[in-house]
Every structure is written in C-alpha cells, then in structure tokens.
Image (cartoon, rainbow, N blue to C red; front, side, top):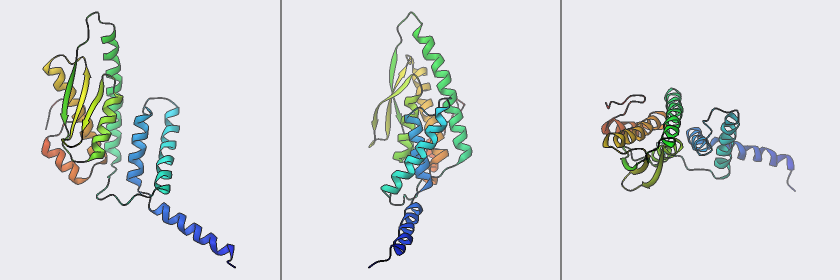
Length: 205
C-alpha cells in the first residue's frame, strides 16, 4: 500500500511546477485585455477589484492550460505602461466631451472609415491597439485584416482629410504606446522603421 504522506510532496511538487510555468508578462498582458474589455480603466472603486480579479483569472488559466514558452515573449516596461495609461485616460475624457458636443449640434455628423496599417508583425500588439481604440468614444474597429496588418476604424465626425489623418494618427499613437510598454525588441525596431508617433504630440519622428 502506498503511504498518503508520500503523495503530498508529489502534489506540492506538481503545483510548484505549474506555478513555475506561469509567464508573468503573458499574465499581465491578459490582465490588460481583461481591463480593456470590462472598462476597468474608468475612475471607480470597482476598477481595483477588476484588476485583481483579472490577474487571478489570467494565472488560473495558465495553471489549468499551461502555455508553451512564448519566444521572444512580451516585455513589461512599467514607466511606458504608466505613460500609455495616462494617454488613454486623457483621450477618453477628451473624446467624451467631443462626442457630447456633436450630439447637440443641429447639423448631421459625418463619419469616415479610416485604414490604419500596423507597423509590427505582432498579433498581440494589433489586438491591444484594436481594443484600446474601441474603448475611446468616437472610434470603433470595423474590421481587422490580419494578413495585411490593417485596422479599419470608423471615426465619428471625420469629414475632412485632416480629421481622417488625425484619427489615423491617434490609432498609431496607441500602437506605439503598447509596443513601447509590452513589445519585444523586434517590435520596437519595426515600429521605429515605420515612424513613431509621440504620445501627446502630433508630429512624427
């Protein structure tokens, strides 16, 4: 007969082995998607609970369904993440005001569909950019062309070439923010090769 006391260490060893397979950058990336989907970046007390719950769910998923190591994987950069979050908060506030003003205007609001080519080959960066674009009032992703690396964005009130270019520039700024906060060296190199939109500025470097 087997000794039950011998099974406990084996169980603990298996649990430790599973915990060792949890990839923190991936868990943080999944938590970010969770927060974006459930509008967790809105200033409310529930946001902290959503953050903790999202991280725990991410870890649980990785424990139940261990993922193979992602190479080269995500790279978490706290300062760039804080800068990105501040930019998204500001854009949400400004866009909310602009949409409210458009609602009370007597003339009809004209919209445009804007094609925004992505500068990296990362599917994660494309997904993060698409979700963040959709949570900002006035813009929503109509279609994502994965093969061609293009996001088609419906932009509210973009009735001129200048307004369409401003909408395209906003999506590129979000892409740049996610790449700098979570992207790999290859992603950053591809981003810089395609031109970088500075967060909070309109010029291109």
